[in-house]
Length: 536
Image (tube, rainbow, N blue to C red):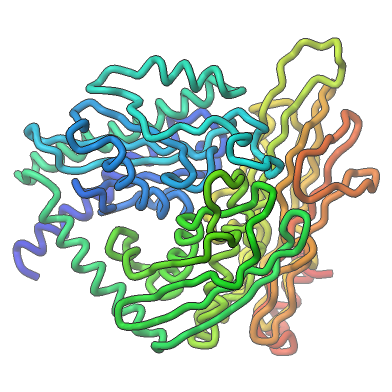
């Protein structure tokens, strides 16, 4: 390794520390439990052209990979001539950000010796953006909440008080939402200061040389990893529940010397409800799936993302267009990873796992007084929950684990702390993992209800109830999900409903598919499953 290469390697390691500190600052300053407890965020540093150089490990693919595409939009919409030291920019535009209004993305330019050298960006899911609230019931994006175009949150260090007022007047949890935007700006500022200290320490004027070093190494390594997939065309289809009818997701993958392209022709049409997916979000989870299968040790940056491209007809559910509703785009978007992995499974039988639960079982509960004479304002409560992942060729699936999103499940204690909700039960769901040589991961059983004196207006956004995760290579399917009230009353899997004051909601989350012939399972592993209560 040459002196220059060694120098850049040391700077690269330091840059990773910078973005990790950036993300930690966001976690520590965030108001929303989805950020503090679940890590539903992203943070990264970009060069002056808006190309992502490095991202924090903390974060989700849906946030990170859409944020990587968002920064060029900030540069274009603000205009190079209007980018100044002390600026901070903000948006939640679904088509220029992360795919729905509930994610706020903040971008901060970095100047060194009066010259623009790059940007920091970060994203976080906020508890409320007004409108109908977090759920799939809207017919247009206009109903889903306030849409913030790319604007200056701060102009040369001066806070845009008018924008703050507009946001505060259009959301239910104003302190939390505005506080989270300040937290995003603060985490970018932490990154900016640490980066300038690093540049001065290494006597570097800008990031150009380091960025080219990182991009060159990453590009070559990514293409080398892609060579493990034989050139050609691969196809797969998946059936998922949808809102009011079953949906088909289809992909055709084309692999050539330049990379991999995913085309979603054959996918079902867009929905009248907010489960539609902007293409940038579908691309984020396609790219993530390919990188974790082919090159899990590689850094995620502009050069590793560039070889993976997507296309889709304009009217399919994986290519939503304005003003189609997109509030819970994750419900369908998270399936893109398993959809695309399934396409290349014949070429990589020892790598690709069985299908998993896929979409998070998020819910938003608006806790309201059960008495019409009680003036207490409603409280917004958001909780993330995960089913089981698919079994891997050599290992069992992971239980109650979010794949592909990677977010952590919120603890019962943290959820109960933010509002009048009681988590009565939260345990692994026996017999929910698909049988196989390797068993699928287990789902959970979660029982929740309003605290005394309250009822819930509950927004469900669940899938894999009618269409469970499929096993692979002879493995069995995972158990489908189930939702009902504790008195046996059926509960719809999507949309806003009421959990009465005297009732509890029981959610049985889906399990992951099994891998391989169940008759080949190690008897000791099966005996341990019975001992642990995983199977009965």
